[in-house]
Image (cartoon, rainbow, N blue to C red; front, side, top):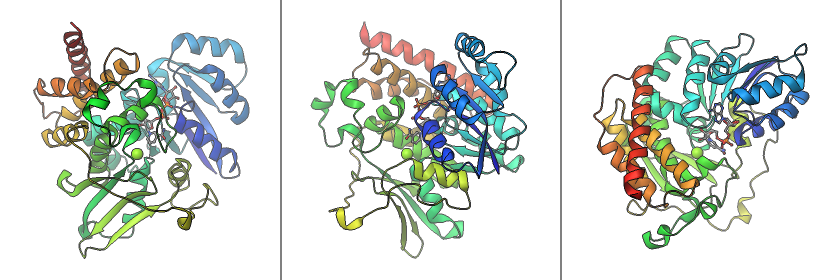
Length: 387
Ligand code: NAD
Ligand code: MG
């Protein structure tokens, strides 16, 4: 029986994971759940899964939850950011699904690694910010980081049982998001509602906007670099609107291996949860004869410059990926609140990274400090754009 911690259990990834687990309760036991503030859903999850510990980041919501479930009954309720981190290290769990969105997932994920838990990593922002620390700590503590992101799960499935030295390059596929094929003029007037209509995937708001700007793919290039130890020059991106081929690995003999399935995050989540085995019938089967065509084309860097900024940040190294990520989080948040145009998201990121003096120190405190600096700077840039 695998004992599981789900960080971000009320989110899109968290809910999909719990759905899989509910059909395999002979193999998985949920011992820890954490959420940001949605205690209505968390309360339902507690009733169904009876975890031993829960944590709620919002202190007021945590108190309300404690009141609702009473003091003398399990689970133990922790609160605040430190409570979420404590829950991530809870002793009696073997596997931590890291599915908090954004930089808030960094400390809990590092804490889980230091507590020697196997990590199922959905929270790509943590790895983007602190790729070196996370991979070094994972090595030091003998911890495996299993990707949950569909592209990286695909790469893992293609690359396994091959020698690292036989890999020529990785091709990450991207759906292109809500606005693939649009001109700069058209992009100028799109609304958050338009951007949230992803053609193939149903996901949380932040990643859906990241898909529309192509920053999601940029973050995934950095994620692939750290997960598979492959230099940026050997990681390519192709737009594949059907989202059937989830990524491709090309080997030195020029043979390619790809992973195919319908776009459903339950596939990669289940692969990480049950690794190295596979569960039966997790997602609907793929009828290739019903799919008319599979197409691939190069990304449009002019309309969607965020992808190039991610390559730039990865090459600059040090604290720059953390700055890229923080500026993006601030810009996406402002766009969702109607305070920024869609085309201003890359502008805010560019102006922020251009002002950053890279530090080669990449300890956890350094990347958190760079994140703080970038948030302040990005807010200033937004103010200057609006004045
Ligand atoms: P979401 O917004 O649906 O859920 C986020 C979860 O994090 C929620 O449980 C929320 O309560 C929690 N949370 C938010 N802020 C928090 C805070 N400050 N402290 C503690 N918890 C907090 O997001 P999602 O779409 O499920 O994405 C989660 C992560 O997985 C992201 O990093 C995303 O990039 C990655 N990912 C998601 C998908 C997908 O299909 N949704 C696919 C690939 C990767
Ligand atoms: Mg992905």
